[in-house]
Amino acid sequence: MKPIGVIAGAVAGACIAVLGAGCGTGPAVQPAAPRLLRGAVTAEPVVSAVPYAAADLRFGLALLHEWCAQDPTANIVLSPASLASGLGMAYLGARGATAQAMATALGLPPASAGLREAGLRARALALRGLDGPGVTVAASNQVWADPRLLPLRGYLDAVATGYDAGVGRAPLLTQPAKAAAQINAAVSAATDGHIRQLLTPGQVGNADFVLTDAEYLSARWANPFQRAEISAGGFLTAAGQQATARYLNGAGYAAATAAGWTAVALPYEGGRLAMTALLPPAGASQAGCPALTASAVASLEQSLARQPADVSVSLPEVSLRSSEVMNGLLAGLGMGVAFTPAANFTGLSPAAGYLGTVVHAATLRVDAAGTVASAATGVTVLPGAEPVLRTVAFNRPYLLLISAAGTGEPLFLARVADPDLP
Image 1 (tube, one colour):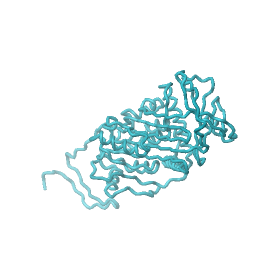
Image 2 (cartoon, one colour):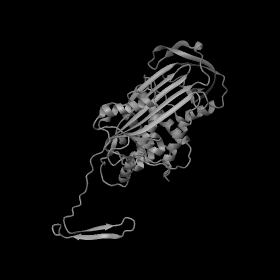
Image 3 (cartoon, helix red, strand yellow):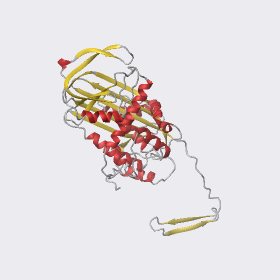
Image 4 (cartoon, helix red, strand yellow):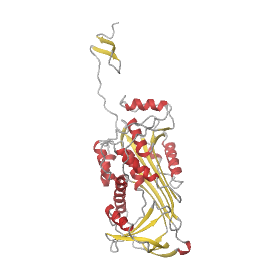
């Protein structure tokens, strides 16, 4: 694949070239660098984003079920797209068993060599293509590195290609409060102020790298609810209590049933985005976490596309907010090795050790006008153990050869028999 982008800055390019060539065994101390470094976006074959969207759905449903099982009576809101992106940037630096465990937990489709970034790029472009009149969808991905560190060039190219992500500098190790404020300010700006504090100084203070994703959505209904039709009504909560909700009432929607679930499609303006409201089987326990599979969702959506828009709906107006450290939930999905010293993230940097904290925050408001939602994911990468280096001692007669790299022409050749003699 031929690069169609360039590394920003001559100094950055030189530093990246040194690391990419494998010179040195530890993190390099860098001179003053640009605030944002970017890898080269590589030319990729055109592939379908559908398998990656399906993977995100499987991952999101599995994670929702794990989270619900942990707290069956709580409201939960999450963004599978944000979590998949934040963890996906870590996955691009994973190797061996760590990469396999992460791919399995994320539900990623098999990709032949060279097509991994192509699929991720197709997914990112498809998300950007949702923008239009009445609908705003924005995503922001970034790698944050302590000033003394720089990811490998291959990793920079991979995240630039798959996620349009660059590398920002933040004093993670020396000034964690300043670093956390810097990262949180970027996340807040990307989510229109809905998520103001994603990470704490304690969470970034021992990290070499932090990977962040931020998502923002604002969408108007294609068929707005009339405020005059909003009414109060009863709602039986997961805790078995009676509550009062404000219901949005409207007509002209498509509905379908599959595997006991009832789905109603609520399209947004422009027709490129829709909300699907899903009601569990009538016999399901209110306090339980009924499992919904990706195949059931696919059946419902296929059926919805064939149904007439002749159904009335009463949908509660809601404003949800969640924030959670996801380590335990992700380990439950099979990603546990990524959080242990046995992890392998050497594709990111020789200094990268294992994941420290995965934090996810999300908000969702559904009202008569439409939907506003935001999400952010932060992934901290802790340093690995200092490598134990083998020492080669030239403590007996040896040779020195100075040659041209391109041709091998020997410019100088020497034997050192006694370093003290001229």
